[in-house]
Image 1 (cartoon, rainbow, N blue to C red):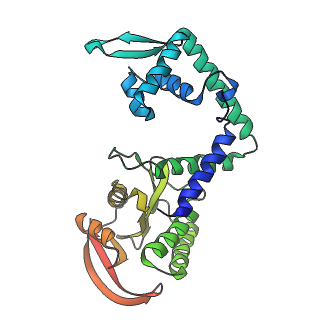
Image 2: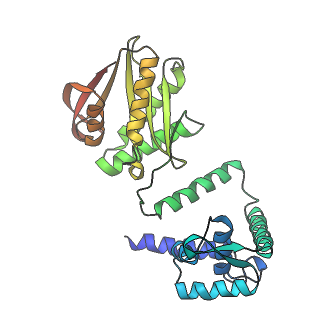
Image 3: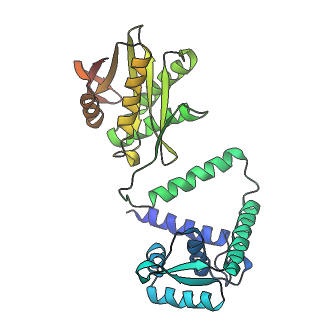
Length: 303
């Protein structure tokens, strides 16, 4: 971990805690601390929450949490209900429900004021940036990821060009001529594609764009698979396989008899995927491109 990353996170934390005003004695000008509000929130929005559940969710010392819960009970904001196995579930009282509703509305009002200067595009950018921060700061948990394949939206084609240039420069050291090639391919497709026989798919993982693939007409019987990529953070989710399998199914439905693609031998993960899905390499040839000596390969799948 670089020191610059650590300092950037610390700086953002200081900025954000000042922005949402959690450093005073009472959050949102209430009589409650941030810790108390988090406890009330988890009880309000959880199902059959216990003190042990709260300690794990909030990473809180059980003794400190127990004292906080007793204080909220004395204020008649929460109560304990015995369930099966003598487990004590925590519930908000009617007074607690009213307090939580007032706190949540105060939080929404505060953010409306803080963000009132943002236009729709900036709001969308903020949502995407906050999802990205949350994802990057959350260790992989092994849980299933939500994968969605969709047509491109305004801005997506530029994103495809940009991410290809950045990823291949970072991972393979390819120069800007590769990004220029991708830009030419995307521009040509956007100007002259046939929506009846050609496709672009953008793959999202947990609501964030994470990959793409193009299906392009080569002739009446042959389609070409182009510009497949998956962001490094989304690899292992199955997104790449979903993109290629969907393109294969689309090509069959559109009446193509084969799919061809061109790749390079250094792209081992993509080549392995193509092979598993039935493609076979039919030609290879060395070339010097993107600042490197490479071996280009043509792969084909009969449908």
